Image (cartoon, rainbow, N blue to C red; front, side, top):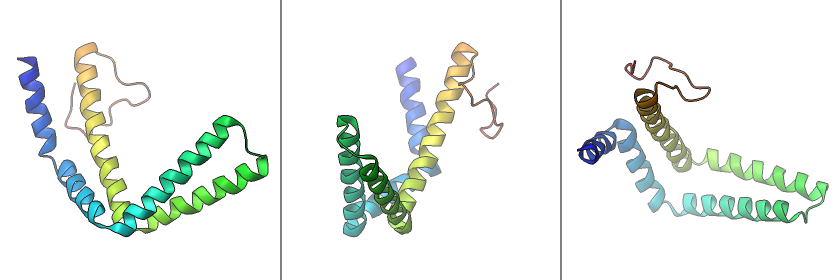
Length: 126
C-alpha cells in the first residue's frame, strides 16, 4: 500500500506545472546545439579545474585566472535563454520536490529540516 501511494504522489508531482516546465525546457535544450556546446564546455572546464585543485598542481595565479574564466563561462551560460530557462526550471522543480520531502519528514518525525522551517507557502503541512 505504501508503494502504491508513493507512485500516486510521484504521478501528482509529474503532473505539476514545475514538472511540465522542466520537460519543455529539457526538450528545448536537447535540440539547441549551441546551448549543449556551451554547457558541455563549462562542465568540462569545471571538472578539469576541480581535478587540478584536488591534485594540488595549480599555483595561486593559475587558480585565480582559472576561477575568473569559470565565472565568465558561467555568465555566458546565464546569457543563453535556453540554458537559463533550463536552470530556472530545474531549480523550481527541485524546490517543489524538497518541499514535499520536508513535509514528509515533518509528518513522519515531527522535525523540520535544518535551517528551513515552514514558509507557509506550501499549502500547510502542520
